[in-house]
Image (cartoon, rainbow, N blue to C red):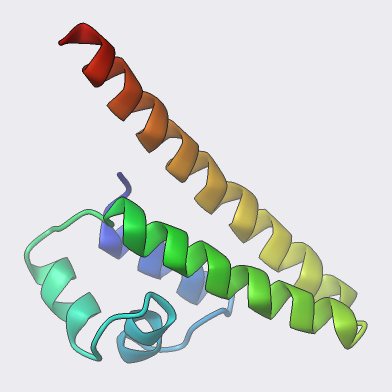
Length: 100
């Protein structure tokens, strides 16, 4: 799974969040979760990544409703990136299970 630092930096660069605290909330976690996870070099868990995906999807839908095309396209790219990470993680888990 993708490191928290990398995911946070991507979300910040695309303007989805401005602070680590905002990113923590976007992921359904307590305010200090991002800072703590980055300092311990943790990866995003699958459930956290899925929750984040759902929240970004809500933001994308809101932007589309308000005719903010540029923001909608940016959020779509972020959603594609997150979905790719989720699918790769699930595939990796499946391969590991089939080897046992």
